Image: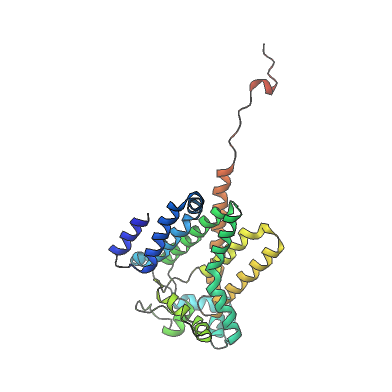
Length: 290
């Protein structure tokens, strides 16, 4: 798999150092020993997810009509903000350094939360490790397919380019997260979003989907886990709108995608763990034949 992936990215002119590092890591884990191979067996969907998201640009030629002004207007009608606008636009002129800091942090940490919880499950030898990894792949697959079927411009795009026909030359933007970079004197989000292969992949919000999915997986661990997971998921959902990356509609779609992925994976694993029926001897059923 690793060799095949490297061949693909080289053939399509997309080779970067991250590709080499990820594929070398994959091969190293496979050969390092039984414990790391156990991690690979359950965590392989994480690698597949990275490859899936990274290769989005190869499929953009099949995407449908890009939605710009219609989604903007629908958001304004369903979730109006003061002044007849909607919340991403309202927050774009009312930001605050404290909110920039908290929201920027959550927007940077949302992905790492998945990895930390997955590793926790792995160390605890909890079967939720494998289920979380497959659900992560499933929710991203749902997102990528939706981006092709219903490509949608994010709020920052409308604020910059207007609601007219989609500008296919539009460059990816860190939007409100640029203020977080400026506060800390770094270029984390500028670098992260410069590699975004699909400007029109806003619906659903995977930023909102990941923390909600993690909340579903840690719910069984008690109130401390539930409260912290819910609060973080709520912060990321708010940040998506505050930083003008997503509409509230995108956030809601992300929650639905996360729930669908969670339920689908749970159903599959439930079928895998159902014990096979045990044959019962005839004599144990009260057979009295001589």
